[in-house]
Image (cartoon, rainbow, N blue to C red; front, side, top):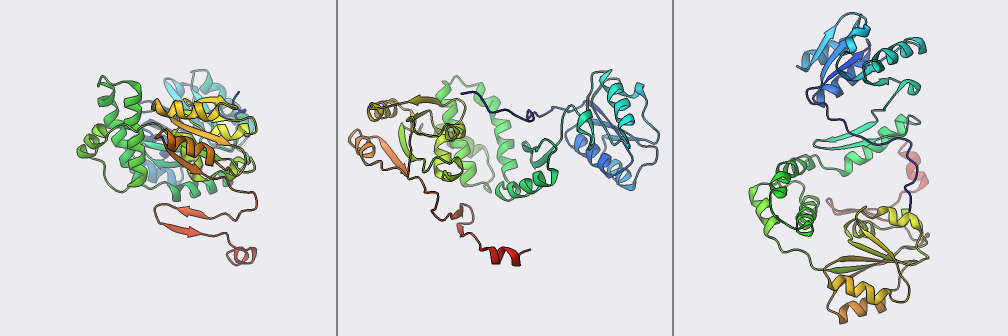
Length: 345
């Protein structure tokens, strides 16, 4: 199944030690200079009449140099990224042409026609970084989504992401089969999600490395009325950890988009139960998708008879009231009424 069209290709630039140029006097230019410097770039800011925001950021960051003059074409030599805050289209066109002549990628603030890329909204848990883009259609909407994600991603995830960066070379140096390495990182992710505030250390690494690999298992998932937005969190987690996904012809194709890319997808019919058990017995994590709310008694009984661990995740109906459960806080939040929403502004 081909991927749906993308308005933008998400990409993350490695800028450590590279030179970038920012042109502009105001707050937007100051913010972009700080962002590039935070990514490790050496930033030259060209501002004939720099605002205090620019001076403050230059003072705070050791990798930003302020030049109190207008930019010149010779300023782009060796530049990876060039950003400008321009008063009009003519100035934007001149800036883009001069930067492109040296091979730099260009972003002209609030002028998409002159942009090779967009910055988007960012959730920073570096080295875990999440970028959000609306292709310039609704920046405020992107910021609102960023704020929502901020509440779901603990700041302590930065420590776990850094531990992954430190441990990955050690894992690659070990003569381990692919499934064993993947098992380590799956246990790593499970532990990070379960205890994000526990700092990962050498003891944690040893525990994750010596833990027994997970045996094969089955998760029987009901897909409800077929709307992907009605999938439960348990169903999504199962899809994202599956080795093999078995589905019938009535399952909406959009639901399969939640699966990890490496998972094998198999359209099944009358032999679904036997195939499911055989794959689980061979050590695979299997998700069996069933259209509808999902009565999985026969399949669950077959798993029990074969000594295969099975979990049933029922689907929800379109009219079933939604309850959002926050796993860390262990709090249930029910939907509010229109009257309550109005009082909240």
